[in-house]
Image (cartoon, rainbow, N blue to C red; front, top):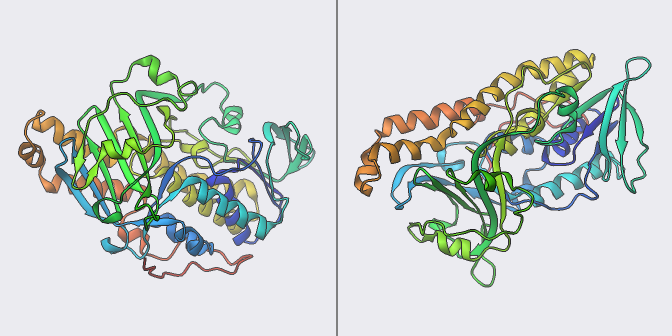
Length: 431
């Protein structure tokens, strides 16, 4: 079976590796960018994604450039705890939660694809522009490029759209859909160098109902200067509409005044002062779809279910998508039936997660505490919402995302005897 993957990001590269592990060798990845380079900022890999990366034989490589996140705190703008919980191994999971630079993860995946599927398995400068039925059961897939040696038309038995929130494949399947939806909020993101905080393995989400800041480290050990790279994202709900639309023009723009928040030895001002580059984005997502798979064509990752950045789920879910899709194709020789089975298994849960993320996912606990405390003292904020209610919100979200401990600590349901002979057995990993 010849399989074409449109998109060489985390989702596309992981899909290629999952297909190889399931026994498929005629797999090709076409990336629209001129080259695959380590772009982006930090991402979190929840334990359910780490379990699947281990099954692919990638755990050691990814862990070497990651930091295990062992504590997550939701706090008021005054630095007082709303809800704090252990994460990964300290929370009783068999797998850690890993924070990693997206570019470092992408480079590991790209090299693994080339090592396992061949040097020509990934082609850059190949932008998909069309697809349709050829003679017989194959698809005819058209590409545009500037200098790539890839032909302008290829044939494949299956096309997988892993081409992101602005997916061309999705646009061809849903030509009337239009651009992504914007919440009106603006997000500023960057990677800074600063001293480790809160023990070095903590993720903090701080907010006051308008501003929100997410901060976590990207390295476990400081360099000689005593600093580590720290990923941060600051968002504002009440951004002007013009600001929210200026995603491209605002690259590199500096933040304006933001709240001077503190949490223990973490000072937000110190984190932002060490920024290397600031990028500004509108907070956008996509509406849930009634269908991902159309015959021999399907969608995966952000192309299928781009969601608001809540709960550290986007990268995790595209990895689980990839494992599910490869399992479905290995289980049924008819690719049309296999893609339909993948759609049935993943789409309902991801549609629900998209809706939950629009409602702020687990981070809604910040709004709950802020609203009930009515902007009062820290004591009032801490007491505003019963702990049982907060626990219910976070536990319900984890179950919806498939990242609850009971689900993750089972053996992977997506293992298939294939090219690597990996079974994805249950094994605790110690950081």
